[in-house]
Amino acid sequence: MASTVTVSTPLIDWHALLQVLYISAASSIGLVVLFTIGVYALSSFQHRDSVVLYRGLNGLVVALASTGILAMVVWGFYYIVHK
Amino acid sequence: MHDTFLLALVVVVAVGFDFTNGFHDTANAVAPSIATGALKPRAAVLLSSVLNVVGALLSLKVAATVASGIVSQGDIILPVVFAGLIGAIAWNVTTWYFAIPSSSSHALIGGVVGAMMAHAGARAVLWSGIVGKVLAPSIAAPIFALLIAALATTMSRRLTKKSDDATKSWGMKAGQIGSSSLLSIAHGTNDAQKTMGVITLALVANGTVAANASTPMWVVLTCGIAIGLGTYIGGWRIIRTMGQGFTRLSPTQGFASQITSSAVILTSSHFGMPLSTTYVATGSILGSGLGTKKRSVRWSLAGRVGLAWLITLPCAALCGAVSFYGAKLLGYSLGDVVVGLVLALYCSFIFLRSRRDKINASNVNDQWGEHGEAIEKSTAAVAPAPRDELVGV
Image (cartoon, rainbow over all chains, first blue to last red; front, side, top):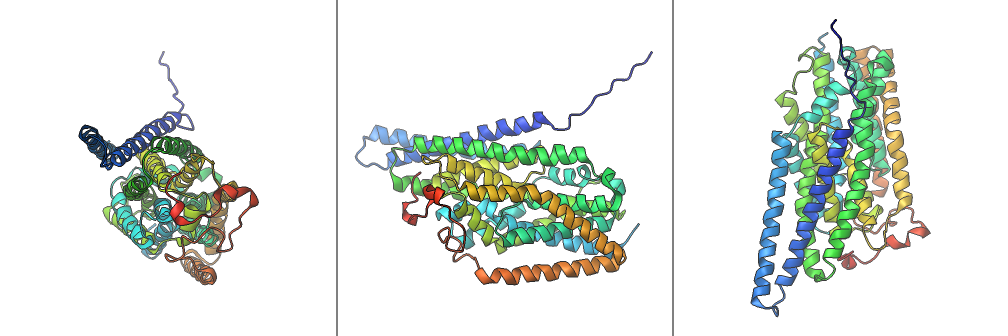
């Protein structure tokens, strides 16, 4: 005897809503923190009295933060447009 | 049934709605940047308008949801789409006059639902779509935005506690230019598509394209340009409410709120949720106020705006239904022309009234209260302060 299985679709797609929350939270807080670290490093980098190694390290952090932000934004758009 | 005249009328009104959507929602993307001085007002709206057009071309998922997930395509006729748009424009213009950042999307969806109910009854409305795809994301998204922005602002504030104010202010303002751009693109991906969806619905109703057909490219381009032009005109009254009303924004808050809004809107667009970008931007700004040391937010204003949010869907639906009955009474073609003229008269009246206390690029950043806005005693924490103090949070 053939049996039919009825699959009811939930009224609210909680899974999608939770994904919006997780992805938004991770990307927003990630971007803001990364940018803030970059700004903090830039602020320290501009102190002329600090030692060369320390300034170099801060410069590296600024560069890494900028690259990270750019990568996140580009990946975000790729994700939106191509998936 | 093919009716080229009525279809043309619907397309013109839809493009008109997209234009009002642009100027009504300019604030979402640019208000924090203008409030903190990261961008000059005119430069901000120009940048936002160009990037809204770019965003409109990026994705069509929201357009598909609006075209097929709100009302039954089998019952749709052109006068319903027309009346829905009239209702949405009427509500948008009214809330703009009162400087209330309400949702253009809810106005549009409410207008179409109201007109559809007047035409075919409640059975023709896809209530599961309304609840699942419109109401649920619209309630959840601003709450998400508020919580995330509060957390992001708090973390950013703590991390930059020891950095010097000049670099922090400069850095955050530079970041705001980027985040404002991102938010404008996000707005284009979500809001321009709603009108694309409605025009597609009209084309289906007229038999010009098949049901479930994809949005034609000319519709995409026309809507993108219309929302871009509307954005450039700049809804200064609402920019003022969002930039100066809810909280006193610093560059750190502005940056955190704009990044949060962009992330929530872009992610929702990806899942095809036609949420209100205005509600998300408002939630983010309120959250950024909560993330400050003093938790400074004008809750009385937020409450009034919240009330307007609650009545937007039913009021736009009522306007849509009244427009439909009005047009039906006179015969659809003549009736739609008359209803369109009544709307044009109403818009002109509102525009002339708004000239009494004109808010534009030159006075949008005046301190809150200078244009007759109420300031409650309990909001001392958000009391106006000299602009050069807006460095840190």
